[in-house]
Length: 354
Picture 1: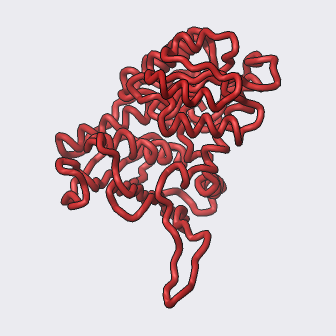
Picture 2: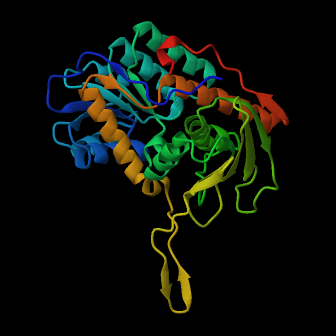
Picture 3: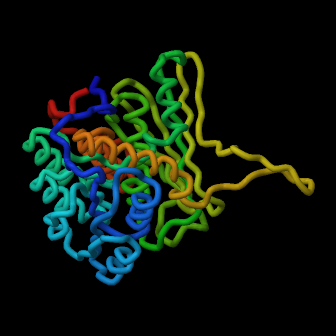
């Protein structure tokens, strides 16, 4: 069977001779602004030298909070700046391809928030461009690989103590969806994470997707198919299910349980602190992904900055981004047309072989 890339690292010449990696952040919305803060206040060895947003005033406002940061409205212009050593892409998915191809043309290292691109065809073009360059330059921001609970689960599975994985159950819940969310985005923007987690945890490719449509919640906006129940079949014989429910109303939850031949393992219960008071017991439920995965984002960016300063690329590759896009495309087809849809993957280039 084909094994997803999990640890590929390509050594090149150092990106910069400076002690500090100078980063251009493309996109200053919720995710981009949070990464600007993270690079300035949390991460060592990196700083923000440029920010880019089509909203010029927003770019100026973010840049004004960072010493020595230049605002831009055009990504291509920012990438030519002398004080840009690396790029963090946090713009909307449809804009990713052009920025990534421009960064590859300039041989700049990139951390790209998921999705790599919105569809498999454009993702494959990025794969081909990086392959033509001859070495990895792009890491995809599947941050769950840096979450401590997921890391421990992956390490446990790698020991073989539990035996062969047979089933993987996932739950992914949001308190409320953004107003622009569509039914297909539950797959392409949310279940994309479970797609990558499945490939990474199990070391297997996803070969087919089936999406079931329960009765829509009365809390979901009109016309939104929410929740959905997604089933993956892997080339290793495992069956994986994902409950995606983006208007659950009570908070943000991500949970996973692996059922193996000799045992099970579960993460995401979120019971770090339980209180007992006034005749009640309980705890709090995280309300947002930036809170639940704050530490994972910190670890992800620190690992990226460290590797980039060494002249290396680690973490999820563009092939991982392409594979996720291909699986999500199959999922959207199943959602819209019904039934089981097989995943179509191109031949995996040697550059991304494990």
